[in-house]
Structure formats: C-alpha cells, structure tokens
Image 1 (tube, rainbow, N blue to C red):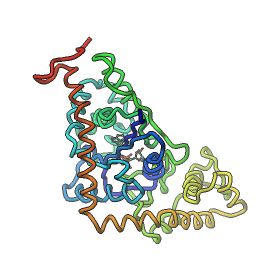
Image 2 (cartoon, rainbow, N blue to C red):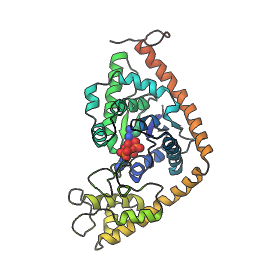
Image 3 (cartoon, rainbow, N blue to C red):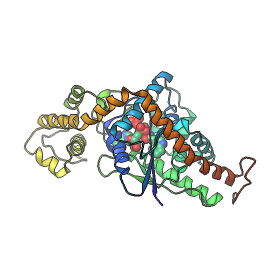
Length: 340
Ligand code: ATP
Ligand code: LTN
C-alpha cells in the first residue's frame, strides 16, 4: 500500500521563503518518492479565521495555487485543490471539534500568539482551527505531513485526536507523522531573528516573498539585521541573525553549512549579504519565470483546482461516510461499532 502525503498552505497574500524552505520545497521532492501518493491543498477555510476582504481572498487563492504550480507541484502526480471545494473537510472538522477539548486548544501556542497580536476580535474559528486542520489530514488516511517546525504542535494534536476516535469507535484513522525538514524548518525574520519569518509580520522587511523582484531581494538582504562581531559563522546562540542568513545561503546555493562558512572566511557581513542576495535571486529566478506563466493563464489554474477537488472528493467521501456511520449519525447506514 502506498504512503499518503498531504499538506496545506493558507492563501494569505504573500508566500515567503520560509514557506518554501520549510514546506513547499518538500512537497515537490516527495512527489518523486516511490510508493507515495501526494495531495496538496490551498486552505481557504483556514484563511477566514482572521478577517479577509473577499476580493483579496479570491486573488490570494489564485496566486497561492499558481505559486504551488510554479515551485513544481505537478497536478498530474499530485492533486492540488481548494479546501472549500471539498465540503467533507468542514463536516469532519465539526465532528472533530466535538472531540477536541477546550484545554487542548487553549495550549496551542499559535493561537496564543495570533490572538494576542490581533487587533480585531478573536474569532471562535481561530481557536478551533486545529480541529479543521486535523480533518484535512485524517480525511485521507494520511501517513506523512510535510510542514515547518511551527506546525509540530498541531500535528501532535491531530495524532491525539486520531487515537481518541480510534479508541472510542474502533480503528478509523491512520495516525499521521509530521515530516519536518532537517534544514530550513524554521526560517527567522530578516528584521527580527528571534521570531519566525511570517507573512503577518508588520514590516515587509521581515520576509522575502517568492515573487519579490531582484531589486527588492537585494535591498531586503542589505538592510537585514546582523549580530555583533564580524565573522560569518553558524552559532544559533551567539549569532542568531547570521545563522539564519547562512541557513538560507546554504539551501539557495546548494552547499553544506560547512562549505557555506568556508566561503566567507575572512570576509565581512557586507560581502556575505551581497553574495547571499545573488544566490537567492538566482535560486528564485526559474520559479518566478514559471509563476509569470501561470499568472497569465488564470483559467488553467482554476482548471487544476477543479480537477483536484474532484479527485480529492472521491477519496474523502467514503472516509466521512465511515466516520458518520460509526458515530451513529444520519439515517443510514446503521451505526457500526458505536461509542464504547
Ligand atoms: P504566518 O505565520 O506567516 O502567517 P503560517 O504558518 O500561518 O504563516 P501557512 O501558509 O499556513 O503559514 O504555512 C505553510 C507552511 O509553511 C507550513 O508548513 C508552515 O510550517 C511553513 N512555514 C511557515 N513559516 C515558516 C518559517 N518561517 N520557516 C519555515 N517554515 C515555515
Ligand atoms: N495550519 C497550517 C496549514 C494547514 C495544513 C493543513 C498543513 C492547514 N491544513 C493540513 C498540513 C496539513 C499552517 O501552516 N498554518
């Protein structure tokens, strides 16, 4: 039996280098792993946990899907779909909402961060969203979930929920594992190396968007925060900013951390940042070229999402039916198993 891979990305304005190095890059690599079936999802229902302007959300959905295609998601291998087009996600999300504890959700650090930072009112959706994320994953019998480090806690909760349902109603869900990359799992902000690079950062100097122009990329690295001292060495304790930049360099230039450090021996931060910017410009150039292609063909992007949703629904429906039957929901079929 093949291993099922599933992951999701929120369509919120920009997609940044952290999203790419922490998640998207692995989504692409996994497509070619033998005996795996990948499914990738643009999670628009997660986006509305915070206020969205409808016309902006529409644009972000299309742009996020175009970015997924531009980085190399091949819809012939891996269905790419929009979460709200597969209503089974919302339905299972509600069921899981009724099995997750208030205390568990209260411990989620992402909720604590986001509800504190937000100026607008905190919605119940923002609080319960890990249950919907668990539904995204469990609906497809997922084995592996490629994500950045910040999603580890949500994955743990998903595993707990899968085991809880299995204990209550009999074997129902595959218990999934997070797949977190060795390098790039937590890219930090360029203007603040203590916080992760984030699309909701107040300043655009925090991140490199995948569609930033070469000029913008050069400027952002030029003004990026560095540490005291002058040596370009990897030391997360003493040199968090430089270590973050070195991580980006080593991935973008395709060299080991050892080699990256060797290249900048005896050079200062200024030279390092210049070479770093050129490495990232070159690294993103082919992605940006493909992105322009997809952006000029929005109907093709919609077709990909439509086809993806059709294939995803075929997979999701039987699992949801099984869950409903096991819980005793609906008129038919009769409950199987039943709550112990
Ligand atoms: P933000 O906090 O920036 O609003 P998010 O984590 O809500 O972003 P998503 O679009 O939902 O963003 O995340 C998509 C993927 O990118 C997830 O797998 C997440 O773990 C990963 N990711 C997000 N930020 C980073 C980062 N700074 N470094 C590495 N991976 C990241
Ligand atoms: N919550 C995730 C995005 C996400 C996801 C998923 C990731 C939603 N559903 C399912 C993996 C699997 C985030 O990065 N904020």
